[in-house]
Each structure stands twice: as structure tokens, then as C-alpha cells.
Image (cartoon, rainbow, N blue to C red):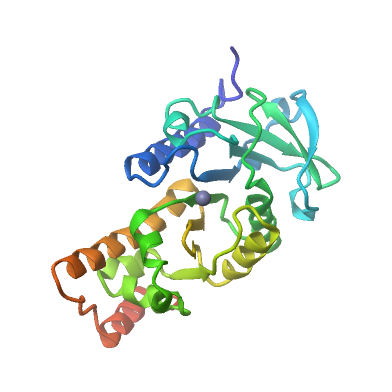
Length: 269
Ligand SMILES: [Zn+2]
């Protein structure tokens, strides 16, 4: 069967990278069953051939009107699909959609009629905001990193920037490679408008946000960038927990050491 990736090496490379990340999510134990979502804006790859593709299936409402997304194309993980399957067969476990001119509905254009994730409205709301700001970010990622979720069960760690400070202080690279830190969204019903709105608001100050007792949501230049930021935070969380298991609370780098890091590497916070 013909694929939208045939004869489009740049688009194929982008989808291959997404499949690679899906594999990492599964290998890390962050993507049980159908857990997690990935959405990437692939409008830059939409040539004449893609723009003239016929629709597969019906026009579907997004549930929101997102004016920046008119005519945009996205690859979206399919609803009920597994990351471990997507890693091997991305076009069987996700699809490419086109946002229609009403900015409130979409159609699937390739490769198969795989319905997008139920979290589509929140992912697309973030993409809409990114375009509104002129951001170069093209990827959004939601996953379930074990240690970070465990930390979100501690009320004391949910204060503003409490976890950011702990995680940054475990190893210098975490601050360097996740320089805006970790935002916090208090528990909300998955897939709800409240969850989407709270996430959007927190992403104004952070590239990664922790959903209390649920998981993380990240935005990045591409899917690897979004993944890397979660990965460095997760590494710090593991170091913190290892120290606790050895029977002591880790000291962490001092405020002076972290300030020095920001100055030398020109970090934003
Ligand atoms: Zn989830």
C-alpha cells in the first residue's frame, strides 16, 4: 500500500524520529498499554501532493476553534494505540490530519483511517498557542514517567518550583537541558477542558509540566527535544529516590552553584 512517506525523505525522517521516541517511552516503562500521546506539526512538509490528498472518512469536530491552525497538518498518535506498536509501525498506529478552514474540524488524509488520540483538543490547543506566539516548537508529548509521578504524590513537592529546584540540584545537566524547569498542574480529570486550560497556562513559563498523580506534558522543537527534557528530569528524580533509598536526603547543589551555572551557560532562570 502506498504511504504518504513514500518519496518524501524529510517527512519520513521526522516520522522515524517520532517512532524512535515512542520506542524509548515503552522501554523506559513510561507507556503502559495505550498510555501517552504524541502530536507533531508537519505543515512544513505539506507539498502540493499532500495538499491534494483526498479525505479518508468523515469531517470530525475538534471541540474547539483554533484560528492559528487553518490548513495545518499534524501527525497524531491514534486513540487506543500502543507506543510499542507505534515504534515499529507509525503509520498503522497514528495518522496525518488536516485542519479544515473553519479551524474547528479536521479530516484524516493518510495513511489509514486511524482516529487520533482523545487528547487531541489539548494537544492542538498547545500547537495553536505556539503558532500564535511565533514559537519554533513543533512537537507535543504526553507520557507517564514513573519516578516523576511518584514525586507528585508528595503534597510538599507540588508547591511552585519546589520540584524544579530539587531536580535541577541533583546534576548540573538537568538545569542546562531543561532550563525552564518543571511546571505543576494540580490533579484534574484526564481529557477535560480544565486540564487543557491549566496545561496551556503553565506552558507559558515551562516546557515540561507535571500532571499531579498522572504524568508529564512537554513541548519542544521536535519530538526528540521534548523527550530529552523529560528524560533529564526523570534522571534527576531517579538520583533523588536512590539517595532516599540509601537512607539519606540528597544535599543537592547549592543556590550559589546553580546561579553560577545559569550565568556561565546563559540559562533563562
Ligand atoms: Zn496519561
